[in-house]
Length: 552
Image (cartoon, rainbow, N blue to C red; front, top):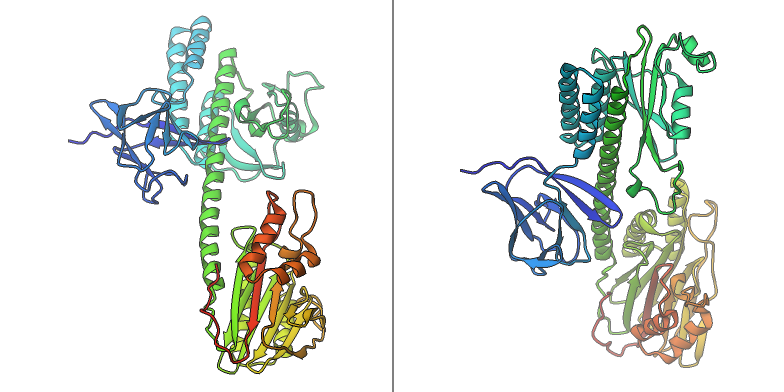
């Protein structure tokens, strides 16, 4: 008979990010596969890596045949009993660590301290009642995971303790602005209006990161009563900041109040009856607020990590799709040989190339969309499909440029693209149109020349006109097209690779790979700042070409 394990928290530590989780069943599976209870994307983690098993009243970690092993407190294991605060690494001791927290994350020392205060101050009956209430509040907070559930439990438990009429929680957004997240009345009614609160109390608690509390405005000193309290007839107001735990504050934060320290504010008030909080009540209230703030912080980190994980997954899918689009089938032609390569500086980029060929002619396009990343990749994919279909239909190069320019300008996407389109016939006639791109480089037996006829990039001015040019090339000539990620590639000294080095590389290198090696050798350890794409055509007249190459 399978026995369900007790709810046992675990915490995944990945760099500065803590992601809480709970073991609810046995076995609790860990691995890279999406159907695992705990999914880890570390490269050394196997798809089905390990299991946490509850057996005979104890938890055990068991490796299930992973490739790189499972480690507990630095020692590789096959199966081992877990104890509180064990550190479990999967695949590598340098990767994410899972902390086994069998004792839970409720502060027992805090409970003992509060119990001692209760026994010293209150009657026996109220001792037991307050302790029962506190333990119940801690249990409720520690069994919920979503932020909205934590906030609702926080308001409900603090309304129970203080006996006030209204409770609210405000959270700080990314812009540093407080926004109402939840509101409840003592009867459980959902409150959506925050216009009748004391803004002064909220602002002071946020500014000082300290409690703001007036139990009876009628008996308080006149300086303590604010205009909003008088106008809204507020008798009791309690405002407690929800502070991030010190170990989770940002590096460089001082010991004082910082902008990133405050997660939000707990606000409680009454209009009819004044509040009556003892010293123990006050300590209980602050403790519950502290525990709730820690849970909110962990939940927000977990949400941020989940969003980042989903974004990485979507980015990987987009990169695979774009790679498939860029993996152009290079045709084998009797009069020309084609080579191409593109290296994005991010997972996806804004460069693209394509090839369309038949028995009589060969058409190529190389384009570079402004910007980087997802937005550039989306426009690049759209533009690639548009140009490819028109090349396939045999449209004039000038017409293709005009259509692309009109499309981008009409959509008003805030981007533009530089682009070169070539059409080479089997008898050596080369038609080309250049839309703001780096000049094509023609390397012929008679020397190196730039094809300099050029136009504006497509997508800048809707009324722009475009014109192409035509040259005849001789057998043995090479045409080299590159994006500015090649000529503007930087070394560690901040120097560009430049046009002169590109010309030298084109003359001295007999392959595209050799040119790429020169660029990489020049850059050294300097990271790429832009996508690098090269496209080369060698014209042979009617001489048979070498075997076709494929993009990488």
